[in-house]
Structures are given as C-alpha cells and as structure tokens.
Image 1 (cartoon, rainbow, N blue to C red):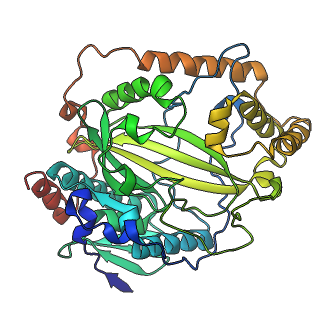
Image 2 (cartoon, helix red, strand yellow; image 1 turned 90 degrees about the horizontal axis):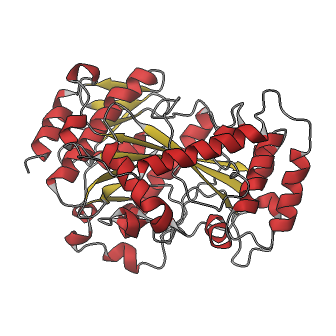
Image 3 (spheres, rainbow, N blue to C red; image 1 turned 180 degrees about the horizontal axis):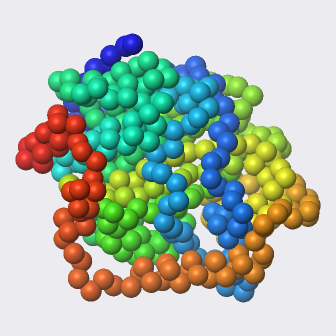
Length: 417
C-alpha cells in the first residue's frame, strides 16, 4: 500500500498568486498517454420518455432554455463497479492533476473557500467508505482505495483537499458562494471539463461563467440565481446536460492536446456520424451545512451515439426531436453538426421507427412533462420574499455524518484564517 501525501502548491491559490504563467504561456503541454474508453450510462435511460434530458418541447411553443432540475433518486457519488473503467478514469485524473495542475485545480485565496474545500473533503471521507465499503476504507486521517491500494494521508502538512477529492473520485467538484450580483465560483477540481477550465472561470459570477451558452442570460440567469439562493443542505437537486462530441476524450479544454488516435477528431473533421459520442453530465447540487457554500458536482459519461440509442427507439426519438427543436446558435454550441445533421437524423429516425420499448412513455406524456418543467422554471424565477441566512439551511447535526477529528478541526480553523 502506497501512502501519498498531497501537498498544495502556492500557485493553486488563484489568480491573485501571480504564478499561473507556466500554464498560460506553455504551448507544448505534456501529452496524456492514456487511451480513453467509453463510459456506459447509469440510471439515465429509464422507462419514461419524459425523464430524458434531451426531451422535446411542447408543439407550437418557442424554444426556451430550462434548468431541468429534479430531486435525485440516486446517491451523490457514483463509483463505477467496472474495475477497468474505474482504474482508467482515476489514472487519467492523476495525469491531468500532475501535468496541468493549474488548469484543473484552483481556489481563491479566501477563508470561506478554504473552509468549504475542507468541508467537501470531510463529506467525501464520510460518504465513500459508508456507501462503497468494498472500494474505500478510512483509518484515522488516511483514506484508502481498496482497488488501487493507494492511501491518501489527509492530515499531512500542506495537504490540498481539492487534490484528494480529485484523486479518489470520478466526479469533478466546483464550490460556489454568493457574490455581488449572483453566485460566483470559489474554485474546484475539474479534470474532465467540456471546453472550459476552472482556471479561466475562477472568481466569475454565474452570468459571466455562462456567457458562451446561447440565451443563458435571458432564459436561465434569474431562475439559476433563485434556485441556488433557495437550495438547502438537506434537499439536493440534479440535472442532466448533454452534447454530441467527435472524440472520446473526457478532458476538453485549451490546456490539453490529446495524442492522435482513431477516436481523436482531426482539425478538419470530415468523418461521418459513426464517430459521434453522446456526452452526458450528471450535475448534482447541494449546500454545505457549515460553510453554507454550494457544491456543484459533475459526473461525466461517454458512449458512442449508435450504442446509446441502439434498441431504444424512444431515446432516439427524443434526441431527434431535441435536435430539430434547437435553435441554430444552440445547436452550434452543443456540437457543430450542420454537415452531419441529415445522416444523423436519418439514423435516429430509423431507430425511432422500430417497435416501441416496453413501458415507453407516450408523446403526450413527454409534452405534459415538458410543460410542467417550464412551469417549475417560471416558479423559480419569482422573487423570494426574504432570503433566509445561509446558516439557516443547515441540516440538524444528528443527520450529518461525523467528521474525522482532524478534518473537522481544519474546517473550523479555515473559517477563521
């Protein structure tokens, strides 16, 4: 068993540290030698078409960007039961943290941010061994991955809680807190971004973070702010995000150029639809009960598009409907598919025309669910009479898992340093 002491570099404390030049100026980034492998989805394609994240929109109504929040049915953290897949993703995360740390781990140099990062690690140390005892064990300050044999000493001097979080899970984590006008990004560990980086977005508020997303300011900015303001520590929410990608690479950002491979898109991608990947993000939101910060957790799944829709006519129909409904600018944002669109829709329509699946939802059910989702979004946008202090959202102490002593001590200390 290897015990790893993960110490934080001063350059991970944010833009104010003045030491991010090496990432921003380097044009010859180290290449990751790990070849990606498709990730099958979990708990996504259930029996009701209205639960699909890319469901269509009610006929005759203009497109409107919706948050799509729902209460989760599955646990916060999703640890793969496929040993090979889990090992591969953990190796990829370790390589990205080692080779381009500034691009994947950042934290503003503020007491609240430090407190929140330790509180997040405390939750992971309590949750992982309890929910996945065959994968993890905790002995005092040391958490051990039973599959890899790696042990992480979280009490070592200078330990970086975000690095530990990024090394022991397949999830990415962002920490948010109220800013001047909206919630802002305090930091996080994001090893598998979809065309962004925590370095580029550090300290930004929600509208600025989402500037690349078409119609986000007009359609989603106010509902998102209301949603985060009302989020309580004892009631998490999830949403699904989807896109179509020409590569199986999980890390997509300007800081990484993957080595050429059969799954890597060439600069002038002239391939057909057989290389398209359905990229899904399971986004989980919950509030930390002590610091009051919001944790935005991202679990990324990849699967070849043909495999994702094969034998699932309702899935193919829902995706085809969503692609037809999306405005041009949003379609460009999801993936530049104009050249492939005729062949893509032809394939999806052919699968959708197959015999319906058992228990598949009806079109009218999907339309009703879409209308209900829109009503929920509008309700979120209504002003809150009086915003309760963040501390009032904390769950009762008896309901929270006990913190390892050293983590609880560091969490309390960080709030006053």
